[in-house]
Length: 114
Length: 113
Image 1 (spheres, each protein chain N blue to C red):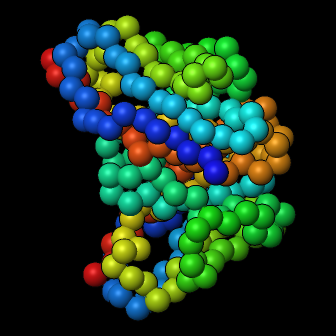
Image 2: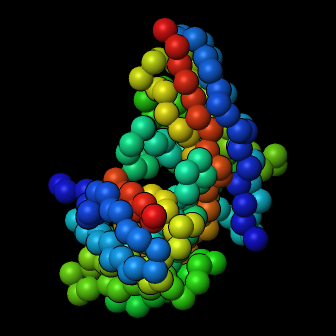
Image 3: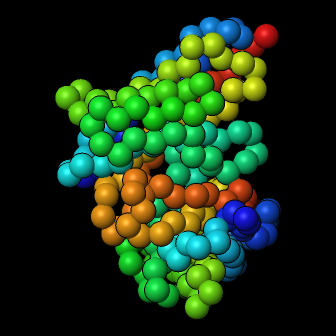
C-alpha cells in the first residue's frame, strides 16, 4: 500500500520565480492538506483540498495556491518566491469522518530560495 | 483559536532513561490529540493518538493520556533508546469534517549511549 508521495525531493529557486510541488495521497484518501515547516518550527497549515475545491485555508498570502485533480492528487504553487518561503513543504492525506481524523504525511519537498 | 504548547528542547537523555515531554493545548470543542515524530531528514510519522478524554494512546513503548481537566497530553516512555532520537510534535485537530491539524513547536530528543 503506497503511502503519501511527494515530488520533487529538493528544489532550489531564485527570488521572484514560481514553483510547483506535487503530492499523491495515500490509497483510499480523498483529502489533501499542505503544510509549511520552517527550520526549527512546527508545520503550519497552508490549505486543504477536497473534491477538487479549497475547503479551508491558513494564514498564507494569495501567492500560495493549489489544485486537486480528479484522482485526488494535488499541486501547491507558490508565485513570486521570497527568501522566507524557504522551508520543508509537507503534504498530508486523510479521509473526512475518520475517527480521530489523523493525517498521513509524505516525506516533504525541501525548497530553498536564493 | 486552537493552540498547542510543548516544552522546548533539546532534551538530552542517556539510554534507558525515562522520558517525559509535556504538552498542553487550548481548543474550542473536543479535539483529537496526536504525537507525531520526525526523524532527521524525513517527514512526519504518526506515533500515537487519543480521541476523547481519558483515552490512552500507545505505540512502540510510548504512551500519552488525554487529560481534559488539565488540557494536557504528555508523552512518556519508560526506557529510551538511541533510535528514539528525533523531533516530537504534539498536535490536535477538531473532530468533524474539517481536519486542519495544529502543531506545537516540536521537542528535539537526543539519546546518548
